[in-house]
Image (cartoon, rainbow, N blue to C red; front, side, top):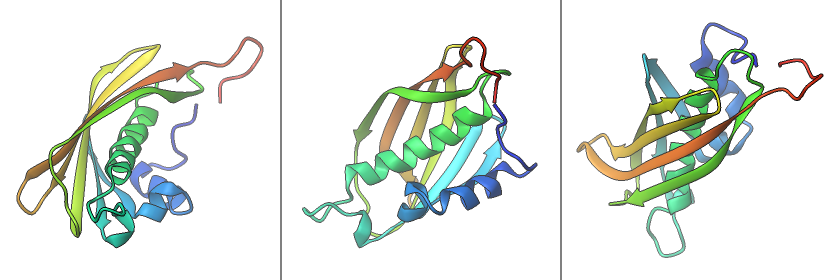
Length: 148
């Protein structure tokens, strides 16, 4: 699988994601530093649940997007893609407005699965809002199909 077409996967991802859910939520990848991937999302009323708190799905979307970006870059050579097979989040706080950040790091990057941890936090006070873990199944071309 071709990971990205340019030498700047962060910018390329942000451009492609603009027309998808990450773009609709304002999720932006910021950086890659070795095995540490960072993103952000500016929270506003569109990210809230009807109860007035930050919607859990907004937090999960930020974490899952960050881990998915990372997983794509860490696929083994010849893999055709990946898909999420499990995810879990624990929520410890909320944020009604301002910036949320997310950092994702690998726990395991194997030939058949990847496991990623993410921390979603308020950078203004370095306060953890949620922790997230997902498992990705690595996809391989079917016999007779070329690798992408």
